[in-house]
Amino acid sequence: MCSSHLNPSESGLEISPALDTSDFGEPCDMEEALRELGIAQTQHQPKPPDISGGLGRRQNKRDLVQLEHFVVQSMRLMVYQGQLCVYEEPYWKRLSDHMAETKIRAVLEKSGHGSCLTRQDYRSIRQNLLINPELQVEHELAPAEDKLNFLDGAFDLNQHRLCSHNPDDHFFTVIPINYRNIKSCSGDVFEAFAQQLSNGDPNVR
Image 1 (cartoon, helix red, strand yellow):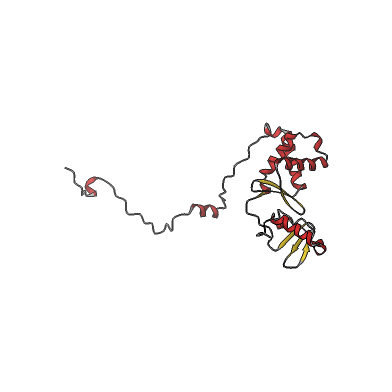
Image 2 (cartoon, helix red, strand yellow):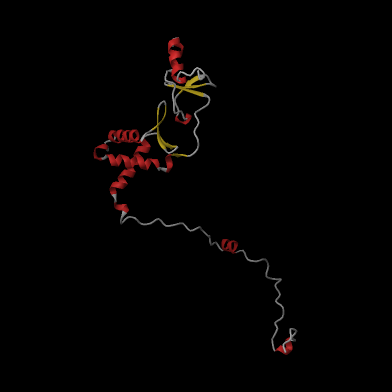
């Protein structure tokens, strides 16, 4: 018959004295211990793959990437709302695919690189520009509230003076007259201007 209360001496078991843990201190912090030993824990960084034997030898693709960088340096570009835009005074212009490729070609031909490029090459450069991280504008752009954009400059409503055009004003439209000519404009010129802006809507005018 088994009993749940056994005398240690009767069971033949040797019982060690209770372990004194008073001198052990606080539990060990492994990360802190490694720092004290001068062993830095770093996050694992993936090693870039070696493509020198395959894709890296596609010199034509590498040339197109270099031409893309040249275009970025030669033009004031951004990708806004998924569309390639270029700043040409006096305002930003949204480019269709055809217009973008035409402007890219003009820049490269002026630099002497256009003679050896095909239409597919210009298309590839445009497509690369659309996914260039440096050109992406994710936030909403609003035109400067305190300025009016004229053909010959932006009129500052606070300082009451005409300023140079600035791409950071984020204008996508322009008032199609020169500010300096406003004082000499006849009533007919102003009425034509108001008609154009309001599209003939008297409520807008």
